[in-house]
Image 1 (cartoon, protein in one colour):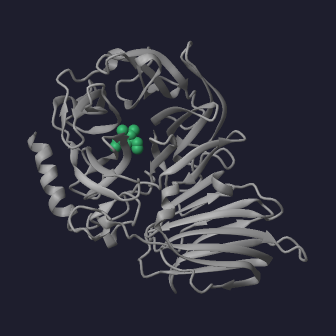
Image 2 (spheres, rainbow, N blue to C red):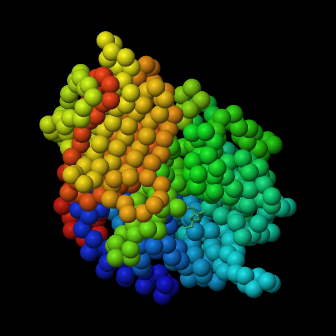
Image 3 (cartoon, rainbow, N blue to C red):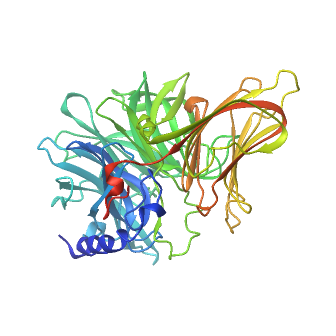
Length: 508
Ligand code: FRU
């Protein structure tokens, strides 16, 4: 084992175990110590789900990238394992960037990741050169392949850039072949997803560009994923530097999906529909997995590159993954539903039906806390004009609150964390255009201490945001401008999993 990896493992074992489970999310994965970004190598290996992640153990800010590692039986209770990769070779000296994992035919787990090496340019500037590399392991320890790098600038199409060539996502294809999608910055066109094939996982051949941005959605693309679902092929990728298009693609970085058909003979992707994958503030670089029981499950990084560097280094961990989301396609839309195993954390249930609200704010006894699974059904009051606004406020105290509000006249759902304790002039709100029938709307809110994910109309749209409000803010309230009624079913989420009682490196 290299000195760099040994040092990272020693450091995280010491500092990670000092972070109390009560100071982390209950069921969202957070880093063992320090900083986390993208999910990597999301896979099922030797009877467990494995999640690796972009990781810098020594600080809660981004630094030379390592791969952190955690395993889980149900995607909700995570056990931290020692760091899997450290930047310790000439070709990855400046970082082990994002990548994926598969089970090799000989039973070993194989990781493919982007190696980053800084290179001085003729004009004196320094740029990152990116190549693709392999490591083989047993689920805990990984050895980098002697033949690395396996893909370099020589494997790019004309117009490709060796400075932006990353994030390989592998999967098994037909007749024993392996496929891999990676992103590249194509000269003048922005992001491009490239497709590669291999018979032995060691030698990879460029099949061609699958989709080119032509500067339609942002500029460069990152972290692609391609899979078939419900009669479509789905391409997920995350775009940098987006310009908003009406209510799609908010300014900045965000994840989008293309629904269409992958022409396996010509090697290109025909897009029929494109949409944002999440309409909130914090969701990026997701990866999907096919679970052993056949569900396509997606997990993203629940953060935003434009707001993730505002905390001080005294924060012991930063960054968390989204809830695992089950994907399906209905009416040309990618639906996302909270992983059904979440129901196993449901404890006390409080139900209120036909709560009639007219121009006031109320609290409902038993509905409170920061770990909640709450379904709301909003309805107009048939006797009155259509209501103007409904709002649910949570993580609320005298000083703080975070709001999800709906204006039926404009069909706009808004999340707002302006009063969540932030002292920075950064994005605190996002709006989404939602479908409703005369003010009838269904919302499911999942709260996990420092986050809220809003699933609209059974997963037709999702809005995610982290909420860093102190955990003493526990109240929930409901508000209406105009006359309306709603039903609410709220479950407290709590953990009685045996791992919760264990000390040591278990997160819960
Ligand atoms: C996406 C990303 C990837 C890269 C990694 C670096 O968030 O920029 O493209 O591999 O993060 O940490």
